[in-house]
Length: 256
Image 1 (cartoon, one colour):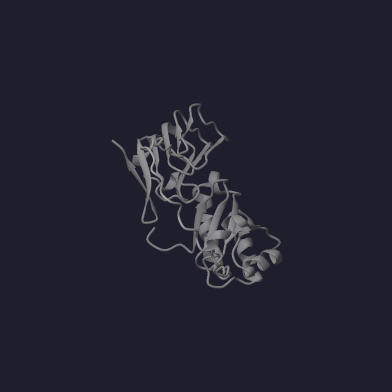
Image 2 (cartoon, rainbow, N blue to C red; image 1 turned 90 degrees about the horizontal axis):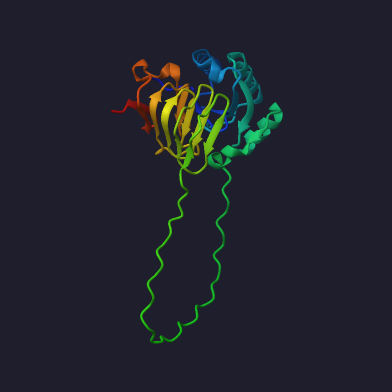
């Protein structure tokens, strides 16, 4: 799109969308969400949404926040919580009767910084022991890399099923069916048709990628940046593709 959206919608790893408010324009935000629901009703109709005011310079008042909640409900989604932010956000959540999701806490704690610890006095270090002649040292044992192996899913991922590879890549050897979801904190490799959803970099890794042999996806996302089927060029459907992030934009290209 050639213009900046008032609200940036990102998809989380548990199926809850985080709506980060960039411009507090209730009518515009409502229409943007209504458009998303109309374009992809299977994904967004009655979807749970967390409202994130962390991108604003001022916390909205209760009346404006309530108007936004009602507008989003009218658009077809269900606001379920506020993203953790400042103490003002916490008071607003109490007034609205909505919970706070601490998952977003670390990113938006701006005004409360812990004081630096006072320097501690250190005991003077004892002198080193005298050197003693010794024989040649034995060969050191080879270091073992502490790397988690990738997760391999050999059975088809069926409708309603979710597979999550935590802190590693995910390789699916067969099909990801319509209504199924595969999620990885690393990259996702799919060696069969992708008809459901694939989410890579679920914890924010923007270097993650998605590779697919036969592309029919309902939704693909990397580090929360997503595209739905209606936004994907028709000439890519059924092709082998690679998906990556470039300048905060999701890119999809056919593979030879």
